[in-house]
Image 1 (tube, rainbow over the protein chains, first blue to last red):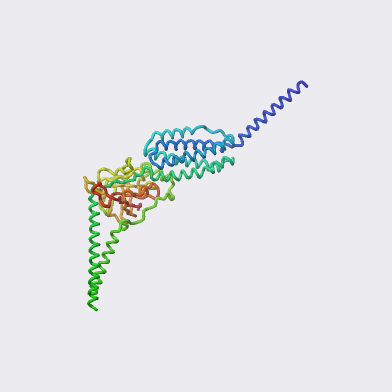
Image 2: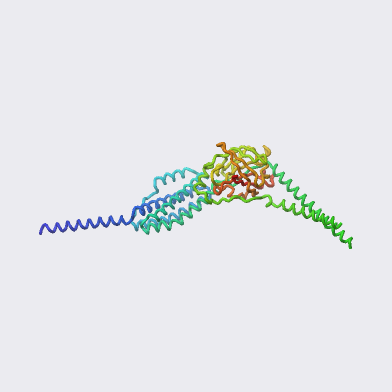
Length: 224
Length: 202
């Protein structure tokens, strides 16, 4: 009897422990690897794009780059707030800063200035947004958690809109706005001469037509 | 006499109409400007053309046989004010190295040249405004290849309204030749317009 009580106590304790570890295991098993990976990578993308948007505010030369940068900060802050909420609900821990690769890319951009910064920044953001779209598409294809998939599907249109604007901006970025290709005036003189000739012909035509009308009318009057 | 009057009036009217038609600025523009829509070209290919003429070899010489234009080309960039650095030698053409290169699959190959220079006289593109649709333009590239284009459009633009599409890095391959034209302002030493030729690979 005296032996039985500790035995029961140990058995109960062991069972509780087993149950607890079992529950804990099932809690993490609830979020498959793909969903966890997606939330973590998408979060890092958000952090990287917020940092890039901030860099654009400080360094961009072109207005269009600064404007897109401002929207990146606002939109990715909003997207990341929703993502963090989902991660908390799913008990997925998130990294506190962008990946080593993203930080290295940010450093390379920060070393540039002027038009070179604008072009490199836009190219980097285009690649980043393409990757972000791919991350989301993979999550929608292979993910299991409805909550994580919801983050992927609600982020996609925002990311696509950024990508469209970046591609549009890239078309004009760094392109010439003016082509100064002549200061001699020789060709100008030729143009002016042509214009002078044009007005001469115009006057001659007018005179000819008026004379014609006068001659025609006189002839008709005489006929009567 | 009535007949003479009618003939005179008709001749005068024809001359009037003719001169009105030729002096209208739209008659100096001709053809359709090739599109800049990305179409089937993958965006990455268009993007890559922004790197030193991606894929294509830099152009080194341009010829327009019908206009007796023949000139060397060197790569040029854009200055801090956004102006293309057209070579200081009026006889040498400048290829915008930030745009497409000949053979790079997408975008405009942009080549600019002086119409004239106050010190050097007529430039390499002095006769460019005489180009007509269908004329052949030949480019030789650094790798020794020759590429042929046909003029498909000509346009005069006010300098301050030069459209961004002239420098598009997207759309089907297209050669763009630019010079200055229009009335010359002696006070500022500048022409009013840019004249642009669009040519498609032939």
